[in-house]
Length: 278
Image (tube, rainbow, N blue to C red; front, side, top):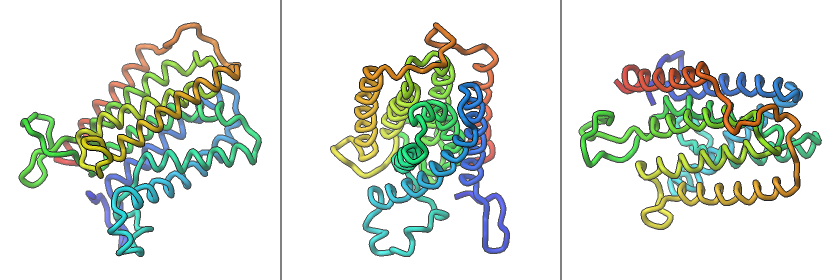
């Protein structure tokens, strides 16, 4: 990991910085949505806290169990060393999802309404966080100008593939947020969209194989898509309609919002190529 600052025995790296920025921006977007939907901001703040904590735990456990189990069985003291890297976003979704489910049951809140509020901010935070990631893709067969030279190999910038796709997904969710027909619709749209993004990006990464040429992450993406489709059907049949529909259009986004999203993509690409991995 690229280090920005060293303080005694501690260091601040690029990945950690962008994860922190992603969390802050995602939190602010979520608070904005909570106010728009007249949902308790205190409740959402508490929920976000537990989702982040258990998301990190889930991300680490998933990585340990799926991506490098033999190493951690031989080095159990390294399991908690998340500062050395090794987190899985799919594991974070599972861990954070379990935390949200338990919290919503204990506090008796509408889980799917809260999930819809958190969807856009979550994917935006993921898009920003990926910019600082140091997990590159496989070597390019053809020498494309956007490749990143590491050692003697020109690699696919898989981090930025996923980041750009996530920014686009954020734009879609942001444009759809005012026209959801039932609670949970926006969240599971997010889950499907992100799983599709990860499925695509996974072809450019080297991860444990499930069924050649598909990886474990491919399989996880497919499972999440199937679960989301089933959940959407169930929620739609229940008629758990959102009471916050004020738009009849499927998409509602203005030129300024589009410009902001495009600007975030451009700035992220600039930082990635001209500062982080220059």
